[in-house]
Image 1 (cartoon, protein in one colour):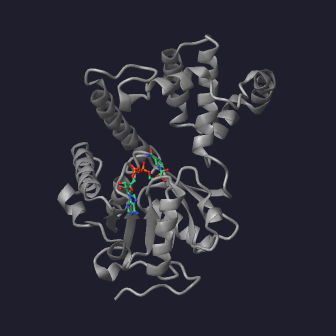
Image 2 (cartoon, rainbow, N blue to C red; image 1 turned 180 degrees about the horizontal axis):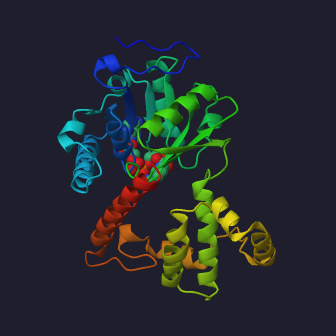
Image 3 (tube, protein in one colour; image 1 turned 30 degrees about the vertical axis):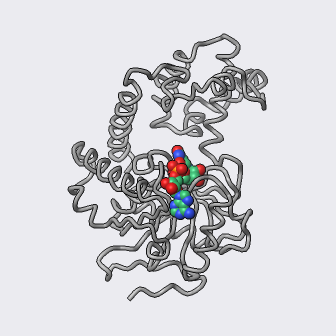
Length: 329
Ligand SMILES: NC(=O)c1ccc[n+]([C@@H]2O[C@H](COP(=O)([O-])OP(=O)(O)OC[C@H]3O[C@@H](n4cnc5c(N)ncnc54)[C@H](O)[C@@H]3O)[C@@H](O)[C@H]2O)c1
């Protein structure tokens, strides 16, 4: 019989129930199914919940397809059917969270929708349950300070969540450290690479780093110094090529800190510190050229190219993941 952990006690796992623990994932959109898959691959029971039955059905199919592809590429040890025994889809929030040690909210980035779910969760979940949000931008524990102050924080996965190893855990001053440590350990056991961000900063860590590079890229293209395809060649053939295996601080140590300091003192003053978006992107958004999803962005994805690039991306990410797992277990 599952019993709720006492207040202040980290959630318990439930091997005697035939699986390690139950994880409820709320929202079967772009992120939810992949997040559920992470836990299934780690041997946990995942319950995916959505108000939309169509999304739920598609979510289950997405998980199965992803597992099939991983099986074909030799990434996972078992057949999709074996993992799918650890999966349940439901439209009932109360059914999903009954017995769950961990609840992950992944509904649209709209505070009102999220808040209504937290109200329900407050009623349904025992006090020891760890409840996290996959938000990419909202300081939710500060926005809803009455809601489970010590057990509610941010757990930010990256798309596609079943593949990208990093997970950012963002805690506040009030978050119970043992809840964060517990989740960090559980994610690591599922093969993830969690990091902790101490306090809310806009964009957390990864999106800040990425936006800093994107701002510079947009700035240089806007100035006419380089073309978008050349920026991408540089990202793939130099920055990404090395950064896959060499972190930023690692790289600075390799270069030599005196050289980094010298180059930084020359280049920093010339970098973009523009706070407004350049015209080359706002103009595209105005015209509806939104990228892969609309068939045109900085590049052209018409005539079936969108499906082709998505498939290629998925395969290459899985190949990269195989290498990552081999060299950074
Ligand atoms: N899309 C990304 O690449 C990405 C990456 C990292 C984080 N995030 C964050 O993850 C969260 C989810 O994003 P997404 O892109 O998966 O959203 P999405 O819009 O694709 O999916 C959200 C799902 O939530 C469902 N939903 C809405 N109200 C609900 C309710 N009351 N109960 C249950 N389900 C409900 C919707 O039917 C939908 O299927 C957001 O906070 C977003 O900022 C997204």
